[in-house]
Image 1 (cartoon, rainbow, N blue to C red):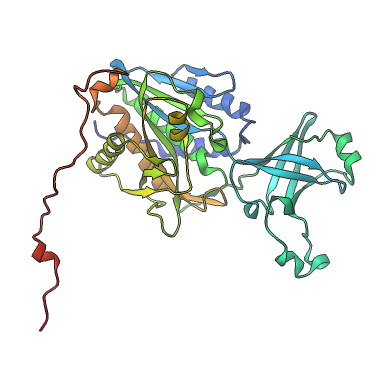
Image 2: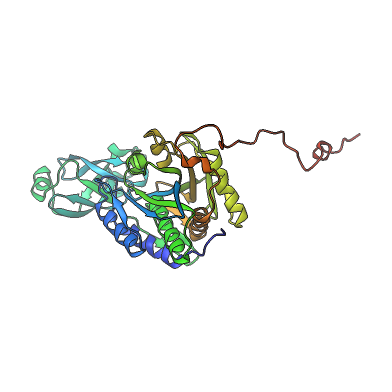
Length: 387
């Protein structure tokens, strides 16, 4: 099957809506409700785990070997570590991100009595007071604090207003959708992935095409702390494609345009056959793509494997500049990745043996090992000898 048309306005609208919902890991109930409502509107019946992860099945022509697409609903954030004598809050990060990108952020602090607004500031925040010390102070979570936008001067005031150790702090996205297609926002990882997953489902449903096998659309809620797909993947899934961000930076092949297909991350190579199936589909459908390896990165694929799932995994990404910071992406990458996912969902099964968890060697695939046959002669590769 060729790629399907993707509703780009729908994708952008979904992303805008998702970015407005705070969802640090551990505080994802609101976004779970919102995404379940959208899945129902699209015509599928989602299942929700005890903690709020989601999976919804799009029925295929046959049941096995079923597939899954997964993205994560949770984002980075922070948590109150200490109520400070000066009436401010010491915090620790939720997920792995630098305090360098926290300085100056506007935040919402969720207490048992309600939500408060505030700002994350360095301990020395005033140039008029500290002069050059503002620039020379260290960077780190122990060197920032939350200033609450309420009348609080000490711990007593914080207690009176209902603040406690462990309160969740959500970081404002400060999202901008520019006319030239660029999107700048915190938490594009992985709310852009969720918007892609929903857009893929919408395109397949509206096309009237039944996938060749049952296909699960899965949303995890704890990827940023390494749990992710550990407790949400259906047991009969044989192949899972993770939709997440790539890392556009010097020394990386990721790009803000097209699809970046992950070949490996810090946990090792992704499944050879599933990864090359995505590459083939991108090539056959004229979808711009590149390959990359991520040294300091893991995703829902790792958590599924570590939890014991015998599942082929691959990683399809949209290249993000300044990931886990002030992130930027282009709509071209989001559209390209959604188109690739429609091609994958509607494509025939390559390895039919995967329908059985265990079996004989019959039907087990091969990886290419034959000697290469280059199109040019060795002499054509050498410069002419001078002298």
